[in-house]
Each structure stands twice: as C-alpha cells, then as structure tokens.
Length: 324
Image: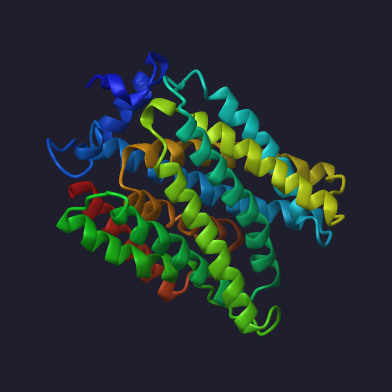
C-alpha cells in the first residue's frame, strides 16, 4: 500500500507506514476514510504507540524522582524532558515534513502548546499532592470527555461500533487510572477535583487543537507545540524557584523520559491529523495501563480488580475501533 499524495509522509517513512498497515486489515470504507485516511490501522497504530510511549515515560518519570530523592524537583525534570522532546520532534521533520504549514495550522499548534505547557505543571502538582485516587480518574475522564464531545461537533463522524467503543473507553480510562491505595492526605477533595478538572480540560483541549491541523502540516504542529510547552515549563520552574541542578543518577532516566515524551507527542499529532479526535484520545487515554503493568512487573505493585477490569474494557474498545 502506497500512501496517498495528501498524507505528508516522505519515502523514508513509507516502510513504517507499511508496517502499520500490516498490523490490522485496512477497511475499504468507514468514517476514518472520510478524513482522507489510508485506513484505521495507521491511526490506531500511531495512537497505541503514543500511549505506550507515554505509559513508559510516566513510569520512568517516577523512577527519576525516586532516584533524586529531593522534594519539589519535579518541574526541573519536566523541563529537562521537554527540552529533549524538542530535539526529538525536530529530528523527526525529515520523516513527515510539512508540505504546507498554513497560518491556521500555526495558530492551532500554538494553542495546543499553551494548553499542554500549562497542563503538565498542574498534572505534577495534582499527582504530587493528591489524593491520586481522586485526581487520576477525574483527570482521565475529563481529558477524554472534552474531545469526545467537541470532536463530533467539529465534524468527526463515528460509526456505531466506534460509538460503543468510546462508551467503553470512558469508564476504562477512569478504572485504569484508579489508585488501589486511597490517600487521606494532600489537597482537600474540592480543590483536588477542581485541579483535576482544569488539567483534564487543558489536555483534552490540546487534543482537539491538534486535530484541527491539516495532514499537509506534517510534524510541524508537534515542533511548534513542544517548543512553546518547553518555554512555559522552564519559565514556571524558574519563577517558582524549582529549577535546580539534576543529580547524575536521575539524569539518565530523565533524558529517556524526554525522548519517549517527544516521541509520544509526535505520534499523537500524526494520529490526530488522520483520525477522529475522540477515538485517538480514547486510545491515548489508556496510557496509564503500561505504567501500571511496568510497576507490577518491576516493583511488585498490586493491580486492583478495578484496574484489571479497566484493561479489559480498554482492549475491547480498541478492538471495536479497529473494526469500526
């Protein structure tokens, strides 16, 4: 299968595209094709790869903070990771170069970068001060609800199977993110709910903004958004006095977090350009799954029954998306 002329994929990426196409059978028709997509296999492959990269990055981010051992250094490592992410997305330009980076694409990219740059520090505050059992599920639900509601309003058309998959993905996101260990410390519940709602809305808005960029813009939106988010994160870290020198033992996983985060942004942008925002966001919203599995395998953390049920619902949702 050869990518169509409007996909903004250069020949070095053709073999990646072909590998994605072999992963799932490509439907001859469906709502994904309405956006000029070569097939749902590519969109789902990009979204799944992005979710995996985010999940592994989240786990390594926890490893980084534990190795450092100092309080209030999360923003420093977020800034370092964001800077490495800039290098990753810039290096990807030859793979999917912009054919036509219109002014509207630039504006949507700037909006996505601002949303993402504001969301990440709030996310770290919420996860650090908790309670995680409140913050994580609410954040996941809101970040998925925003594109699920706005996407169809902006013209995304979903099949019956995809609607069912989306309805399964909503509780799956909440269940997978649910912490088996509720904490009685941290922020008061009303403030935690507000923080999680605002953060989820920002992340969901970034997904919607990326979805408005054209395929002809290639990875241009990822570059613009990553640069703006990095500037915002560095600025917040500096103005709050939390920009400190990273320790040598924690720097290595922090660099790997940056590579994976940049790759996740790149893959998600390409997926949002090619598929319905609600579906792509639903798949990427399952990113806590790989984080939990790694914690279970490597540090013997327990997977609750609720999380296991969430995994099952998430897999079922992805299957429905594939056949939708």
